[in-house]
Image (cartoon, rainbow, N blue to C red; front, side, top):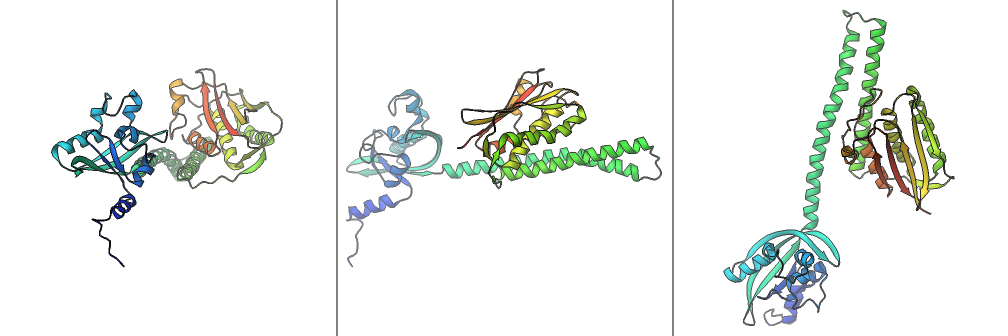
Length: 380
């Protein structure tokens, strides 16, 4: 077999050039692209013929040009461009440089923040000075690292907050149990009942917090899977309301389904949607006065099943509406029956509804109650 002399074989060099996984291109002193390889074409969706001799920014989809509609090198932001400044420096100093760049690029009519590393080196070809540039797209790695850092930070916050929230009820359980077991301390029947009630309430809150943490952790780690089934939604909603009515009875609150729409079928994870409705009704009961009403609405509009839970409690301050669906965020409104909240119910509800391709939000006017709404697409 005849040996290939790469120095004499332009075809071999071109094949090697195209097989490099990094994006490679060459520009002249006017900042015009003279050559590029296959990886560059794929990364920047560059036309094989139309991109040659075009200004660098035109081919890369530079955000500075997009903002001003000016040519590459003529925008007010070109002096900030790391590509341009390094290319100029390379021609002047004849030195190779390595840089990182992250900004918005429009590639294939799609605007996105991209993270690149690039190396540029001065070369001579056909008695011309040019810059040989190698670009590596590290966007996925950077986004994964940022996501991991945010997740670790968030997990640490959860541990700290959970430890703080669970310490108080456990301390109460220990203290009152210790008093009840202390034979030297006399407790009247009334005191004994009061202490046992506190122990039970603290235990219930601790269990709810642990359950919410487990649910939240599962949803956050994307280990949760929806078990979808076709459910006749109106009957399902009525049954969930009926269960919650027994809880509302303790405060003399009446739950009413105001506009029961015609029976329709919805593809949902029954247990998870029941959890969402329970969370919304539980919150409405917590912040409603004794002997008041809570209204539930259900209808279909533009291909979506809409469920609303409306109370007539103190309402929500407008500045707090945006924080309602963030972990451990609690509003300034005080429960009317000294109920406690874990601060995770609405976060879990949002994740469940999002998994069903739906939306959930709250509307309120301070002093006039609150309404929580969620939608789920009705799929034929």
